[in-house]
Length: 262
Image (cartoon, rainbow, N blue to C red; front, top):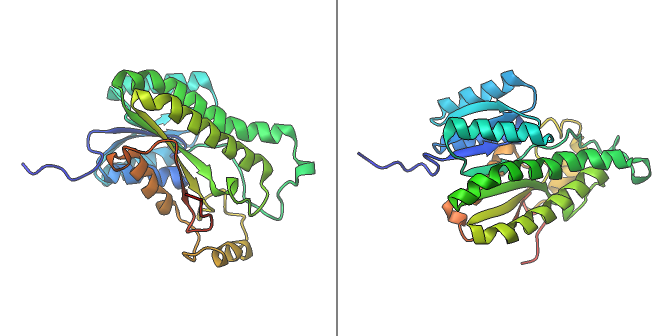
């Protein structure tokens, strides 16, 4: 029998916020490579089931599992259900975040931004990731291996437009990820980030004017805006053995708009 050439056969991948947009694209990319994908969603069951069906059509398997990742109890229950059903989790992709619109004309300036707005974004970025990592970590420690990938933003390095609350929360997530990488490395668990530029089409970018996109494109060496598929590939790379000696890193995926010093 010919051995499988699919990179994630037999692996179980948890993707948060996977019923649409970037998360759905990541889920389907893993399924295409043979994975069993746990499609986490907040409330849109029909959308999540649609992603599950597409994952199965692509040759993987999937299961829609509801949880508000901002709630510790909900996440603990989700992970317990997942482990009872699948027996393991190999990779965690923290993609979910609090709702946000990239609308340059109607964004809040700093003097208009309440601390609660920051808090909302911290809950969606940092608290949600904290909850998921806390729930999954006992299992990963027992296995002695695992990969955690957190979705951040190139706005941290280059705030082309000052989305104060969103960008500050994503910056905190980078710091969280690097501390976690330092602590979990000796346990065989890797933690990395994918830092995305503006991605279209997504719900968050639907109010970004074409003139703003054109401005970003003009400054981007690869000459276009990212699609969800552009983000999925680097996530799979960081989840795979190809990146087995990488941890604490931030892969910027924005066509060269941000070029980090090496």
